[in-house]
Image 1 (cartoon, rainbow, N blue to C red):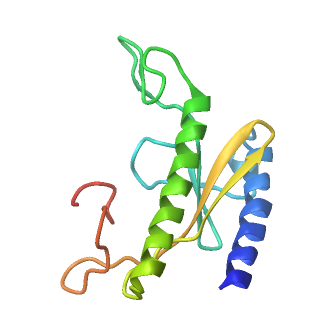
Image 2: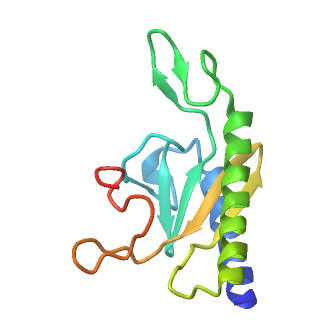
Image 3: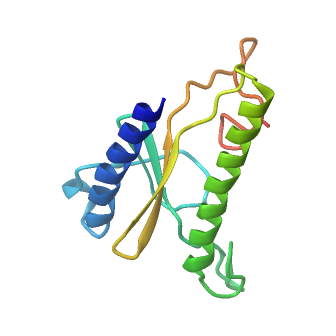
Length: 148
């Protein structure tokens, strides 16, 4: 498991640096293209080799009056970056709790934060989520919040 986690972090850093380096390029010139997944947090999203990437940036929710997700009336990317750090801490806490409970029926994604050139990118391993009678999701949403 430690080797898998180390390989994941290496791949996430490698692809994350490419995404950040090409942030201001036109879409047709980018090595890793954006994907449409729904939701507003994180702006553009990317999927590369089963790793999901999103930026830790403050998103404007409304223009008049200006309202941002983290900063209220003004953009506050540093708070969005802190929020991403708390997401990672929460995942670590869940993992530690599952180890204590010895519950092998719950699976959590791998996650890494990539800080590069003043940006923070969140990298999460893709999980095989199914809906319907053989539903695999216990908490959250597999369809961008349509159902929970």
